[in-house]
Structure formats: C-alpha cells, structure tokens
Image (cartoon, rainbow, N blue to C red; front, side, top):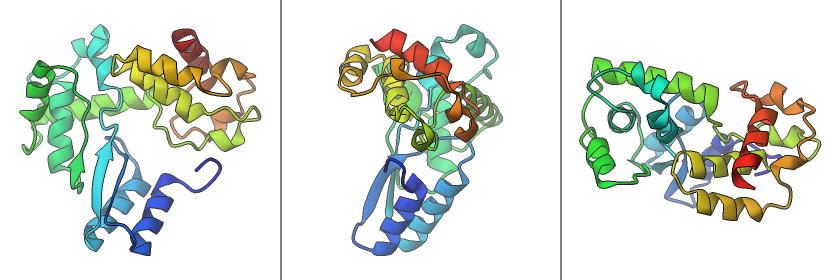
Length: 212
C-alpha cells in the first residue's frame, strides 16, 4: 500500500477481520519483530501463513567468492535456510525459489531438520550480508521520496536479475515502470527512512545500469 500501513499492520488487520483463511507474504531471516508478531497471532487464530521471497539474497551469496570462502563448512545458504524456515519459525508453508535439481536436493535435504552449529552460524552470516546488500522491500522509504520513485519495485526487480538469474523478466518489468531509477535526484531523503541503512541512491544507479 504506497504511503499506507506496513505489511505487518495490514496482515494483522486481515487476520482480525476474519474474512480470509490464509495469506502469502514476504518473510525471511533477520530481525523483523512486527512480522514475527503477526505470524504468532496467525498461529493462535488458526490463520494460514505462507512465506515468499525467503532466500533474501542467497543467490548472490553463492556467487560471491569472498563471502563463500568464510561460510561454515558442511552447509550452504539454501540448506541452512530450509532448516531455519521449517524448525525455527511458526510458518505453515514457505516458498523457496530453486533453479536446478542440485539446488533442489541441497535445499530440501535440510527441510524439517534442526539447525546445527554450522547452520546457525550460516544464518547469522547470511543475515549480516543481506542487511548490508539486499533490500527487505519494506517500502518505508518510498512515501518520502520527492520523485515518488517505486523504490521497492525497482529493488525487487534487482532480485529477479541478481538472485534468480531471470534478467529477461527483470528488464521487461523494469521497462514498464512509469518512473525508473534514473529519475533519482540523489537527494538522499530516503536514507533516513531505511531501517537497514542501505545506500539507496547508489543501488538505484546500479540497478538502472543493469536493467535499462
């Protein structure tokens, strides 16, 4: 909802309204107290929860050689993610984007299994990396942008290209935007509203270069 309530507030209202049985929403590792409170409420109310966009940058992590050099032995980003989603959250279901049979085996072999020490360390490192590099798509910055740029949409399409390897789709969707990243005036108003402290103007410049 551009300029409106947060996703957690809307989802909580949907549960309390009682008209729907379940919802699909963005959810991944990293601290997100408001969404965690919603998930706990949904569990108590018998409301179904389905997490989407759960990988939160795992695709680019695998291609980051420096990051993977320091990754715990005996696990991978997708394997640790599957263990975390299925044993440390109150979700009913989760969607994980998988691009190959080997990735399917790697991911699903962790489902339903408790986190080991290596997996817990992996989730911590993945969270630090994602908080530094990957937009949560929370949309808190967008209402304050003087140019009214659809920042979350632009950075969502970055995910399609960078994490999912679907550059064709990302460029097609980006081309449909009325206002693209090159409209950014670099005023930096958005920076004070980003809970992650992302360098949003710099990221917008890079995305426009990638997708235009």
